[in-house]
Image: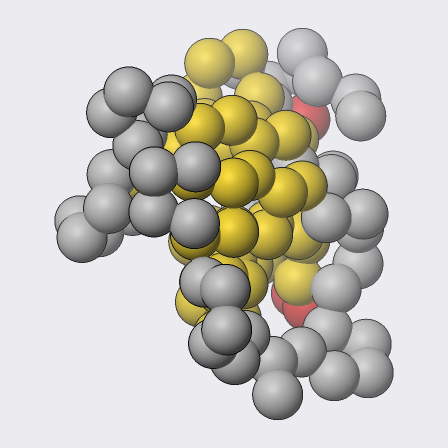
Length: 108
Protein backbone atom coordinates (compact mmCIF):
# COMPACT_ATOMS: atom_id res chain seq x y z
CA UNK A 1 0.00 0.00 0.00
CA UNK A 2 1.30 3.43 -0.91
CA UNK A 3 1.65 6.12 1.70
CA UNK A 4 1.12 5.58 5.38
CA UNK A 5 1.03 7.71 8.48
CA UNK A 6 2.69 11.11 8.20
CA UNK A 7 3.76 10.82 4.57
CA UNK A 8 2.16 13.98 3.19
CA UNK A 9 2.30 17.51 4.52
CA UNK A 10 -0.07 19.32 2.15
CA UNK A 11 -3.36 18.79 0.42
CA UNK A 12 -2.86 16.68 -2.71
CA UNK A 13 -3.29 17.86 -6.29
CA UNK A 14 -4.73 15.31 -8.71
CA UNK A 15 -4.86 14.87 -12.47
CA UNK A 16 -6.53 12.26 -14.66
CA UNK A 17 -5.15 11.37 -18.07
CA UNK A 18 -8.41 10.42 -19.79
CA UNK A 19 -6.68 8.65 -22.69
CA UNK A 20 -4.76 6.24 -20.41
CA UNK A 21 -6.87 6.25 -17.23
CA UNK A 22 -3.80 7.13 -15.16
CA UNK A 23 -4.56 9.10 -11.99
CA UNK A 24 -1.61 11.01 -10.53
CA UNK A 25 -1.54 12.66 -7.09
CA UNK A 26 1.09 15.15 -5.93
CA UNK A 27 1.77 16.41 -2.40
CA UNK A 28 4.48 17.90 -0.23
CA UNK A 29 6.26 15.03 1.47
CA UNK A 30 8.62 14.65 4.40
CA UNK A 31 11.61 17.02 4.41
CA UNK A 32 9.82 19.34 1.95
CA UNK A 33 9.99 16.96 -1.01
CA UNK A 34 7.48 16.89 -3.88
CA UNK A 35 6.02 13.38 -4.06
CA UNK A 36 4.00 11.57 -6.74
CA UNK A 37 1.50 8.71 -6.25
CA UNK A 38 -0.24 7.07 -9.23
CA UNK A 39 -2.74 4.38 -10.17
CA UNK A 40 -4.65 3.00 -13.12
CA UNK A 41 -8.10 1.47 -12.71
CA UNK A 42 -8.03 -2.01 -11.19
CA UNK A 43 -4.40 -1.77 -10.12
CA UNK A 44 -2.81 -1.03 -6.73
CA UNK A 45 -1.52 2.45 -5.91
CA UNK A 46 2.17 3.18 -6.56
CA UNK A 47 4.53 5.64 -4.92
CA UNK A 48 5.69 7.80 -3.58
CA UNK A 49 8.21 8.72 -6.24
CA UNK A 50 10.15 11.88 -5.51
CA UNK A 51 9.70 14.58 -8.14
CA UNK A 52 11.38 17.41 -6.21
CA UNK A 53 14.15 16.56 -3.75
CA UNK A 54 14.67 17.52 -0.13
CA UNK A 55 14.04 21.22 0.50
CA UNK A 56 12.26 21.77 -2.82
CA UNK A 57 8.60 22.22 -1.85
CA UNK A 58 6.87 24.43 0.73
CA UNK A 59 3.19 24.38 -0.32
CA UNK A 60 0.43 22.32 -1.80
CA UNK A 61 1.00 21.68 -5.50
CA UNK A 62 -1.16 22.70 -8.44
CA UNK A 63 -1.24 20.17 -11.29
CA UNK A 64 -2.59 20.09 -14.83
CA UNK A 65 -2.53 17.57 -17.66
CA UNK A 66 -2.68 18.38 -21.37
CA UNK A 67 -5.30 16.02 -22.80
CA UNK A 68 -3.71 16.04 -26.27
CA UNK A 69 -0.07 15.41 -25.34
CA UNK A 70 -0.29 13.86 -21.85
CA UNK A 71 2.14 16.49 -20.51
CA UNK A 72 1.73 16.89 -16.74
CA UNK A 73 2.75 20.27 -15.30
CA UNK A 74 3.21 20.98 -11.58
CA UNK A 75 3.58 24.31 -9.78
CA UNK A 76 4.58 24.81 -6.14
CA UNK A 77 6.23 27.21 -3.75
CA UNK A 78 9.92 26.41 -3.73
CA UNK A 79 12.92 27.38 -1.65
CA UNK A 80 13.26 31.07 -0.73
CA UNK A 81 9.58 31.61 -1.62
CA UNK A 82 10.09 31.06 -5.34
CA UNK A 83 7.49 29.68 -7.79
CA UNK A 84 8.77 26.45 -9.32
CA UNK A 85 7.51 24.28 -12.17
CA UNK A 86 8.06 20.58 -12.93
CA UNK A 87 6.85 18.69 -16.01
CA UNK A 88 6.78 15.20 -17.53
CA UNK A 89 5.36 13.23 -20.43
CA UNK A 90 4.53 9.54 -20.07
CA UNK A 91 7.56 7.28 -20.08
CA UNK A 92 10.04 10.11 -19.57
CA UNK A 93 11.86 11.32 -16.45
CA UNK A 94 10.60 14.37 -14.56
CA UNK A 95 12.05 17.76 -15.50
CA UNK A 96 12.57 20.74 -13.20
CA UNK A 97 12.46 22.64 -11.14
CA UNK A 98 12.28 25.63 -13.43
CA UNK A 99 11.97 28.80 -11.39
CA UNK A 100 9.13 30.88 -12.83
CA UNK A 101 8.97 33.46 -10.05
CA UNK A 102 12.20 34.35 -8.29
CA UNK A 103 12.93 34.43 -4.56
CA UNK A 104 10.37 36.32 -2.51
CA UNK A 105 7.56 36.09 -5.10
CA UNK A 106 5.44 33.21 -3.80
CA UNK A 107 3.75 32.81 -0.42
CA UNK A 108 1.14 30.05 -0.73
